[in-house]
Length: 320
Image (cartoon, rainbow, N blue to C red; front, side, top):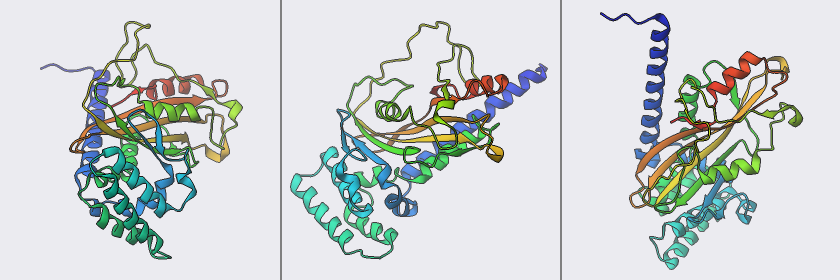
């Protein structure tokens, strides 16, 4: 009988825990995608997080979101605009049908008054159709998606650290992207997410001075906790990945350390996203990805040993 050294046993146990967490992540996200919208928190969440939504067409142009005039109206009217945008991008209905649906939804929004928003959104879904393609996309515009991903992070990459989400306007964004067939997609990058990252890479949270944070973002050339060794340091991270037309829903989040008594000496922040890709035709969930996008901390004040651990555990890469 082969007896493994204790060190090997620890690594095997760690890997088994990671695989279990990964399976739970995939299972949880698929449960959300396959559940009836009435059983989810969508009706409650949608008015609350609508301002965080961005829609990009197949040319990666913003057609709805924070960079347009859509954010100047109330949440119910924004939902109407979002539904119209998704209908237009899906292309299953005539312009006249889309306008009729939009008018019905706007009438519901205008007559809502001080009524409970959750009940109003429920009434709007009676018009949208709870089994429609739009509903299948909107099911993923829910906090449940991020909670499932956070559970994965807390049990794997950040299990040794106390962290919390960054509650700023750029701390959470939901990007719905219509993707063309046969386009170039890296398993470590997503254009919609990277555009958002470039727009916000110079921003930091109010918990640490902007000048004190130095980017430690790097592609590690050695084995990370859950990564694989890269033999060639000049090897490109871009790979061609062909797929049929699809729709991806990405929740981009910022996380930061919980600094005891306001001590920011060991403060760090990182950006991550969970991406759910749906087949354009059936809107069934095809794959789940989770990426770590960046890591920032003050390399001067951060203890070297902890800095090395952070760089290893939160290496910029596709984790799932």
